[in-house]
Length: 178
Image (cartoon, rainbow, N blue to C red; front, side, top):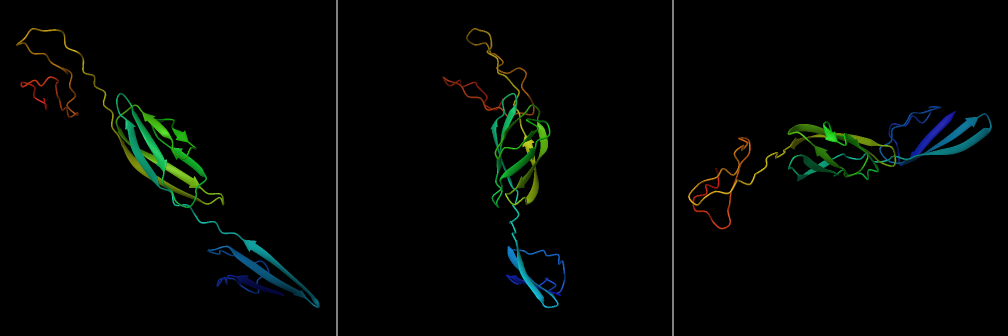
């Protein structure tokens, strides 16, 4: 016969089962007394329960001229010790670093995914949409011109961008929003 007990008490433990299956929510020591006629044996087994990490992503755009550099930061709790990132369209496209910087060459929205694992082998996954903004516009120096003439500062202005112009010295004829 078998007689199982545990510390702390596991309310789901079948005390008479020869090979119980347990799912403790915290680390637990299981004790068994095995009786066969006049022979009695006692033993124990320790089941270590690791907390599951809670995956979380923080994002900061580092630069946006010509391409975008996005700093991804692991904001997870639960002491993660392993990281698996995926970044569709990014360079690199994957990373196992905790806080990778990734370059994107096109505007748009991507879904970054992070899988974190801890020393106990427990894992959690999260995904986050990230908007990629790139400014691909250059202001060319206009040619020299005479007083009273005008010069286009950015003849190929992109209608999707907002421009705010200033000058030094102050030009009273400059439209800052043009």
